[in-house]
Image: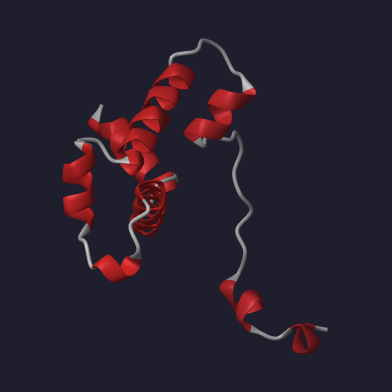
Length: 108
């Protein structure tokens, strides 16, 4: 389970995305409760008032991991499993870094 967590944490839900999901969740709760920003209420106090224990970002991560487990257990080679695990047969061609660093007009 920890390997799955590391794999999908790195791929899908970064810290920046988690912060944005949490901010959206709090914006929605404030809108539903009609709490203006000038009320100076903390997010923790709003969550306490609503008796919320699990955040939306946690639920997203949990469902992503469950989906990964579902796909990873499939037998055979199917497109979803190949995409999710990131395993592609063959080798990538080696690109010389000198070609990438020089401008296109000089390479001609």
